Length: 279
Ligand code: AMP
Image (cartoon, rainbow, N blue to C red; front, side, top):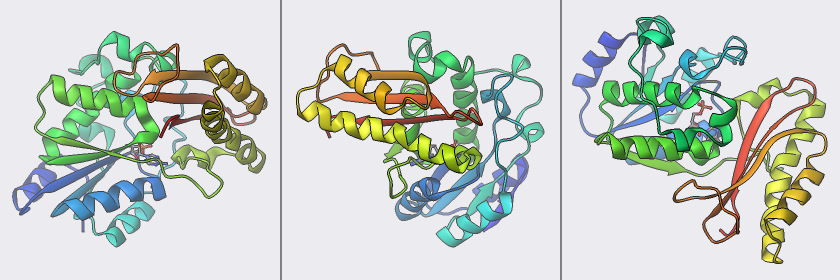
């Protein structure tokens, strides 16, 4: 496995790869959620490239860019053991010639970003789309793997690929959870042991909603029930969108994706999770 931190070396290495290429973009601090994407990519491609890059332009001022967990050696170990061909781990300087204001960016449509995570993280999805587009171009990948954990991100990337005719297939991968259903996240590292327990109420609310829907609960019932379960969290949103359009829904139906973002009480860690209510 090659570990590459500069673009010219990456380009040179990719010239010599034979067969199909799968790309798994990550910000590192790899866990079993990332590994599920990597394993799928390794199973479906002759070569897999994993990018490990804490992308500064997708963080707003005051967010956790500086404290975001970085553990490249450990990440490389996981990649090596999983059969990855290349880990691409560039510095911000290698990726960007200047600050965000001086760069050509890809900005998804307003109606897709002015809601859910995009609403509380202005500019976030411009940063995500711009780095992902660069990684698509650099890797020359045939397929790229994204987790349903970041459902809005996945939807926006799929739209970008369609709108801009990227010659790449986006593979959507299911959410990997701990045994008690907490969705795996690199940000779980921030949690105190008390917060780890409290954080569990996010997935509890989602799984409970799924049960309530079977009994005929409506949107109002689901919100009330969720708020009740998440009393110890600072809830940012509980929303319901059509999984095919990402438009808000008034009524629950077979396409309803329920999404939650909430902050934990001590470290103020922002966590997100979602569930298809009628799966
Ligand atoms: P990140 O490193 O957090 O930017 O995530 C990199 C990729 O891994 C994204 O496509 C995420 O959606 C995906 N991912 C993160 N956590 C999980 C999880 N628990 N299950 C499945 N995919 C995940």
